[in-house]
Length: 116
Image 1: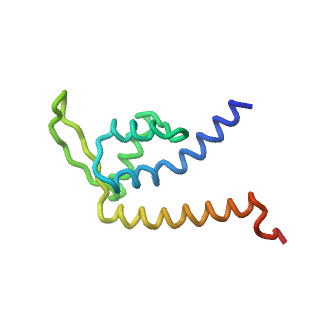
Image 2: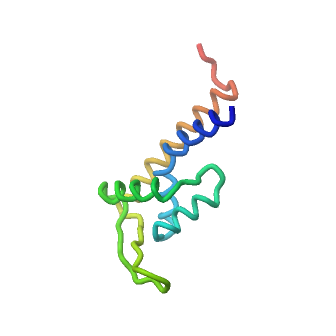
Image 3: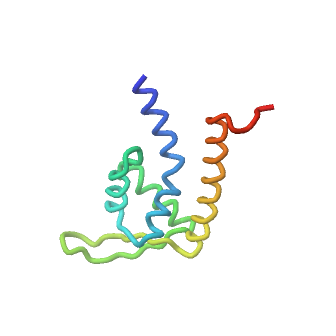
């Protein structure tokens, strides 16, 4: 049963990661490992670098994040990600959609609306 629960949580998380990453970048630019670390701080949002970097690449190609390389004080240069203007608009739309869906699901789970 725990394995099924873990798989279910993984599917929910995959669907939400793009929104969560955009929300993190809305607060300021981050490099990839920082994003992985910030997600790991929140139970249920943990994701590996192997999941996050391809997603960041896709977001870059879609024009919702911009990148810049900076020297690192402790190693090779780092690629920093920040929300683009198009990304800010996308975050607004995704947030609205998320809230609408979450409210509808909560309504069904709590038996709020008649299912007639």
